[in-house]
Length: 388
View 1 (cartoon, rainbow, N blue to C red):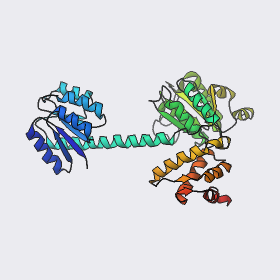
View 2 (view 1 turned 180 degrees about the vertical axis):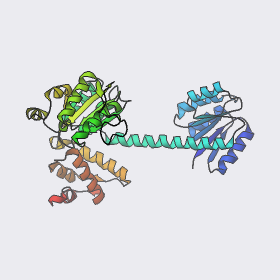
View 3 (view 1 turned 90 degrees about the vertical axis):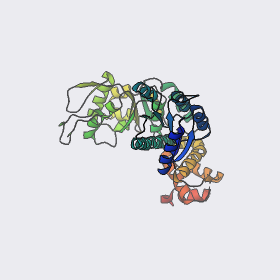
View 4 (view 1 turned 45 degrees about the vertical axis):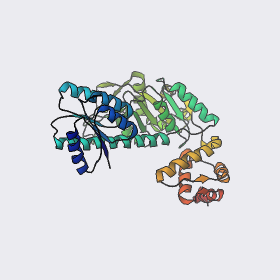
């Protein structure tokens, strides 16, 4: 049940608001001035604050400043019989959710409270989601290979240098790209991902550069491509070794000139995008075979980062196991579990052809199928069921 704090020096106003809000099933607290209201917020968490502007001891605008410092996510609705446009604008600029003038329109007040509740819920959900995402994209490991990657990211991320990430499927190339973006000066702009292997060759150019209406049979509307969507941010081109030669030529031009042309269009569009590419192929061999342009390779590989396979860093398996164990148990709402020392040793014996992706799936399988302590026998029984 949502909890609302009313800050108003008029007892009759507080009483009226309390009766209405309690009828609407809200929990209500009262404060007779700004000082008292701020003191209550220091002790208690409120979902919404209704705050008068003209009050003794501390007025509403000053109280708003203090409340924003204490609890910036709490929606604050300012109320005043002395309100004017300038006061309303000042309150909103300082972070108020809304401004309502007296005499109160109760219907409008209730709608405003519901909207503020929606905002509060959205902020909370976003925080939870960001926390989940940040946990999902933790870079876990203390092996030499991982330390070198972390050092390289710290050096390279603040620049706009293009980066080519190599490594096997499931080894964590996307994770490296994400951290390059998060630690860059472009972190507040979009990170747009495109998997070049997952898009048919005849559609890859439209996907990357967009198309004009009528450019081809199914182009019923104009569409922005990934380059335009990533404006000001980072474009992560995964599995770039699978891109067609014609698309490679256009990507090369985009990198050289910072301009693109939509499919079916003639107008050149300037783009400001940092390109990070990744591949599981040996591009030198692809160049020799005539499948990849050498000039594009040199454009993309200003910085080269190789992600080692899990087999090359098995000393990280205990940390990875603990990381995934905690994360997956929380995601499934399950009580915590643990691996025995022998189970960890058994995990280190496995040939992880699918790298981190395969390892995570195995840990999830073991969590679901095994008891509180996962043993070496459990690993033998369930880690590779198809080989049993």
